[in-house]
Image (cartoon, rainbow, N blue to C red; front, side):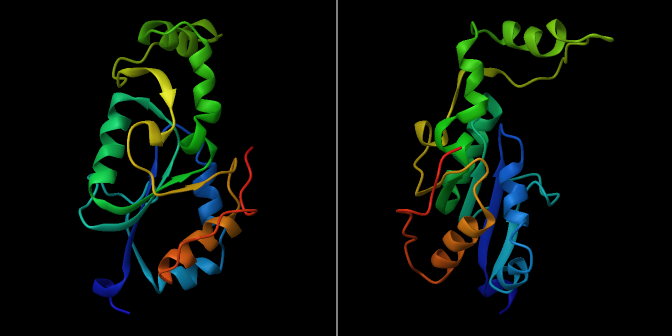
Length: 180
């Protein structure tokens, strides 16, 4: 298969721990099989700055927590045929959304994270994207085509969804997915 005939796949990491990307990589030798069928066109594991056009499948890990991430996921949605929420943070907000219980303001959250709990040399960052009032799952901002829950989802489940989509089939998630 040539690069021109491979399925164009992207992954995106928003506010999360990268555990979903670790599970993606945990597909181990199955990644070799995938590499024969896909072209990875955007990912935190590749040094590509701008989300590309004409992406077939995009997997997005993490919740929406700041204005830059909203713009990023909108760009991914606009340029992707299929967009997948990958992991509980993307599907429900999960751990990232725990901050929703705190009084909300950029200042309060930044001070809590960088100043209040710091024992040595507290410093407040100066170049931080504007935080959203509440961290949110992806589907509250853009249309999501498939949801892969789990914290993190298993490599087997990620591989199942990808191989089904690559075969032109709709993945059947009943009984395959779990939360937390």
